[in-house]
Length: 204
Image 1 (cartoon, rainbow, N blue to C red):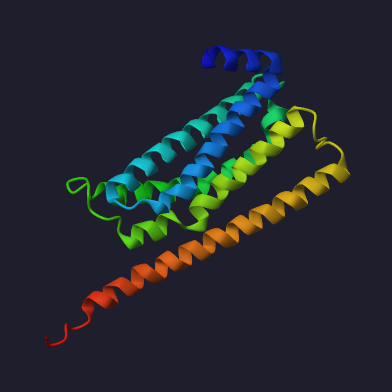
Image 2: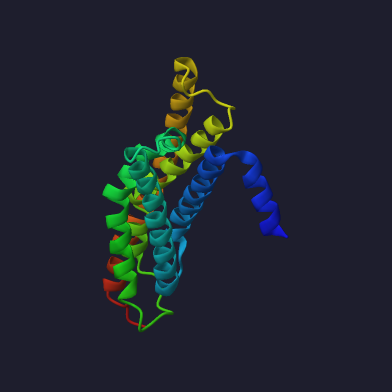
């Protein structure tokens, strides 16, 4: 029943809007996973979340690359609809994927002890702004692309584009500050914990 309803909605949307909405939904899901990544309490949970996020991000980048190749091959009708996502998606490919793979490999080292608490250093790495922020900005660009494809926002009008870019910049700055503060807090915890463990135990 749900699949029939979804197909009906997508069929009534038109190709551009349906494709853009699907890509934006995937980008929003990736942004949510990126936000949840450093909240994992065990190494196994961190590894699972990192694997899911990596799979979702790679799939999203593959779809965007396929659309770009289709545009070069002469099928350029769908390119304008996803154009706002390409710049942040490039940042995801260049910056976020490498850090995400590092977090996944670090968490996989605890595969033999799945209930081990997530190491503070790995959680701090998972919360790094250069991992999460490009993915979250891609999700924001996806929302803007959907609004443009639906005809609710005319990005071709300079005044409207300026307002959208300003609003997106403010939101992205707020998200970046939040990510940076969380990373700083977790990094401080990762440094402070060994110091606490190294203290000599007092005489009972």
